[in-house]
Structures are given as C-alpha cells and as structure tokens.
Image (cartoon, rainbow, N blue to C red; front, side):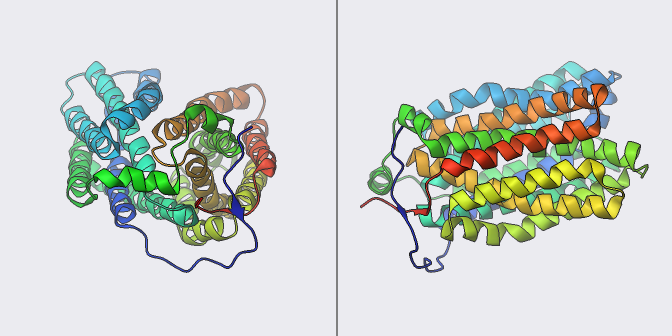
Length: 406
C-alpha cells in the first residue's frame, strides 16, 4: 500500500487566510450554474409529459442527464490532461447552455431526451474540471475550506432556483430552459474573464508543493479508496434514497400534502449551508479522519430513523441533522481526493465523481424495489448501512492534517 503524505499532529491551528481568486470565481460559477439547474428541475417532468408520453418516458428524461454524466466521466480526466481544466470547464458549460436552450425549442420527446443526454456530457466536463482546478489551486491546510466555499455556491443557488422556477413556469414551460441557458452563459463569461489564465510556471509550482502521482499509486492509497466508498454511499443516500423516498413518505405515511416536502428539504438545505463553514474549518484544522467517521456515523443514524418519524416536526429535525452531517460529508472526502492525487488529479476526480453518480442512479431504483417488496424501514436502513460502512472504512485513514512535503 502506498504510504500517505506526512501529517501534522498536535500542531498550532493555521492562521486564517483568504481564499484564492480562482476559488472565489469557481464559487460564483457554481452559484449561477445551480440557480439555472434549480429552475429547470421542478418543471422538467411536466414539460416531458406535455409531449404525451408515459411516466417511464418522463423518468428516462430525468435519468438521461445522470446516465450520460456517468458515461462521459471516464473521458473527462483525459481531456483535462490534454487541454487543461479551464478549457474543459468552459466547453462543458457551453455544451450545457446550448443543449438547455435547444431543449426549450424541442419539437418532440426524442429531441428533448437527446438534448438532456448531451447536457449530461457537458455537466460531467464542468464538474470534474472545476473540482480538479479547485483541488490544484489550494494547499492541503485550506483545501476543505475552498471546497466548502465552492459547494456553498451550489447550495445557495439550489435554494434560489426552484422558487424562480415556479415563477417562470407561470409564464411558460419553456421559459425555465432559456433562463438556465442564460445563467450558464453568465457562468461561462465569469470563468473566461476572471479565472486566472494558466502560466507556464503554474504546473511546476503546483508539482513542487504536491507532485502529481501516477494513477496506479492513487488507486492504492487508502485515502482515495475511502473517499470513493464515501462518495458512493453519499450518492446512494442523499441523491438517491432521501430525494426519492422522503416525498413519498410524507404523502403516503404521514398523510401530508406534497408542499411539505419542499419545506422539509429547505430546512435541511439551510442547516447544511449554515454548517458548511465550520465543517470545512474542522476538516482543515482537526482532520479528515474524525470528520468522515463522525459525519457518516451521524448521517447513518439520522437516516435510519427517518421512516420511524411520527410527524413532520420529528422528520424535519432528522433531516436537519442529516443536513449538518452532509456539510462534513461533502468536504472531507473531496479533500481526501486532493490529498491522495496531488496536482493535476483529473482522472482521480473523475473516478470519485463516477462513484457518486453510480450511487445516485442505483439508489432510487433499489430503494424503490425494497419499498415494494419489504418496507420503507428496510430501504432507509440499507442506505444507512452504506453510510455506516463508510465510517468504518475511514478508521484506517491517517491521523492528523496533511502538510505539503518540503
């Protein structure tokens, strides 16, 4: 097994430092991307159904985006190696923008399906290149805080998007798609104008701090393996089981109107947003290991308890606790990838992203099957078990905080 980089233990807390320019720009880009995405998501099923197709076809439109993200991800790392993060990021945003605008002009269901698939390819290019650039632009002692700021842009945009989407849907079902294309255009312009242009000495300077590692070495690194297990579990539980089953639980078990689902998810999103800054600082100053172990253990317990909630208040409290845990779950594993991959980690980031995508695609399908053949308790319990496995696997992580090698 490859020996991880040295860590410091019982060292003084590093001084508060400003985030780098590229980190701030990437956070702004993330906000505009997610605002547009949040606008489209609520109306997309209704728009697809307007072409006269059944529920399976409507679901296929939703799945096409995620599926093509997964298919494209293995190639994005190689694109980054050849063209660089900034080029792949800009092209990816452009692809999503054009495909979204054209989706609003689709004449039939097949065109909409194909355009959503193309958008998934562009999304993979954007997200993987952005995370690769983010990890390469920060030192280990500020890595989690940079990731937290970037994810904060997604969270704030994700909270604002659905509200705007509801307003735009009153104009027409196609208006949100044009709005999405516009926010993506803004994100692309921000990236082109404000991201620091690559300089000849950048790669050498980054490699001097954290040398790029061969992929085979990264794959053997316990930090990377732990991050991938955590990414799969989080994709399964957060993007899959929680998003797919909580709305059904609210309506069919608690016998409440569907509007309460949005309220509950908003509570969880606010809790996650408020916890993001302290969670990121904890990951950078206390360590990745306790952050992963603690957050995934808490998430496992809270998610397992969800189907036993007697009412909306208890359910909201459990989802808020889960939201706080996801603030740690979103930063610590990504920081581990940066620690393990070093500079220019495009392919490791792509693999890490694919693990989440696989979990997000498989989670709802398996969870739905488990509800049909067993119960909500079994479905949520399976997701909780995966989160608990991630906490156990993290016990093997090195203690302390990684520091750049001299």
